[in-house]
Length: 108
Length: 121
Image 1 (spheres, rainbow over the protein chains, first blue to last red):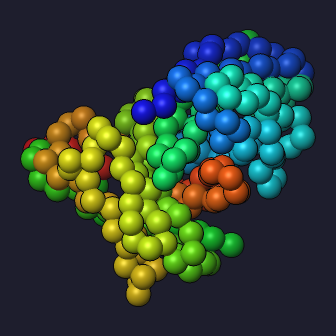
Image 2: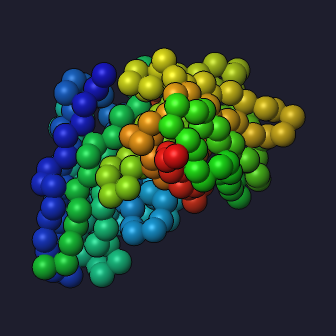
């Protein structure tokens, strides 16, 4: 089973700042990595797939990068609505999927 | 526009079977992959399993011995059955559509709103 480890667990920033979230896989997932945003009381929302492709409706301040085992989600300039929990996910093989444990992005 | 709606009992007794259904509207269930995911209270997301258009499925190894995911094409629904539940199975259960972007690149692009299941006597 591929394990995804996200860091940091919590990130405290102010609106307008840049956020960098990391996700590391226990073995290569090539570029089959997605990022999701979850706000309280809501279902997760797909932001990025294939490591760097923005999903429909994802603002261009969100960008994904990486391949193999190391991935990053960058939010270039934080808006108030961006404060949420972010999960990375990989689906490989048949596919079998796993999620990272999440990074909480909170207002400083 | 594809929409998903989970349904099922909100309360299940320990050792019993948890049964949930996901009803798909706005698209035929047949051409796509579908998934179940759960989220225990205050915790992160856990992938439960996937269903493929042929009716075959793939499960989280930690749940495999208790889990069955199946499809009813006539109703455009897919279902989850989890046997011998314990309090650890208490969670918000989501169904989702899995998009295939090619070259083993998958992501869950449409989610239901989720349904809460509590395991308690």
